[in-house]
Length: 241
Image (cartoon, rainbow, N blue to C red; front, side, top):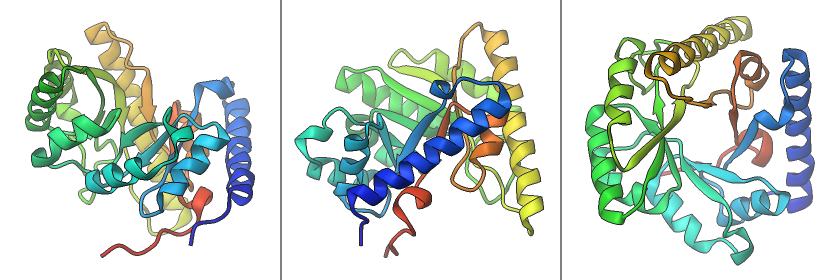
């Protein structure tokens, strides 16, 4: 059952406070880090709560769920951006290009081709992030860091795509200390990769989507511009079939 708006607002304020403290510790400006509310498995009202609070975007893992949910949100939520953060199969690229404002999980040249073609047919320029497996975790999606330069080169040549930056998910460890170490290593690796490739290709690549409920402080310290938070905002996810 979805929490009420007042509880959501309290939780969102607590997350923003965590981000503020992390930014201060890192010598960063709080406004440089956006909070992305992850609404997957929650009803459409979860997106309405985010919009009412003043958040600019929500994240969904599944294309069809996001499409159906967006159609059910209130008119007051029309300004919300919808971002796809889950793995995207090529056969759903057109649906994603049509209904999402940005796709964060682009991890192959094949997917770039499909998205570019779909965006062109729709007459739009689709913002994307390249998902990089910066933590070298075999359980995670994402292009290998050794393939990132080539993937970026291909992406930048696509006339109907706009590359905003990179996304990654940190591996888990056997203990909290190991998880934190993995997260720090992963986030710093993606930041360095972004800096190197931005200089090499002469593009800004501002966005670094990294960090979630449990490791957002480490992500902000490493340079994250977008933290993806679901559990701390809405509670445990409902089971999906």
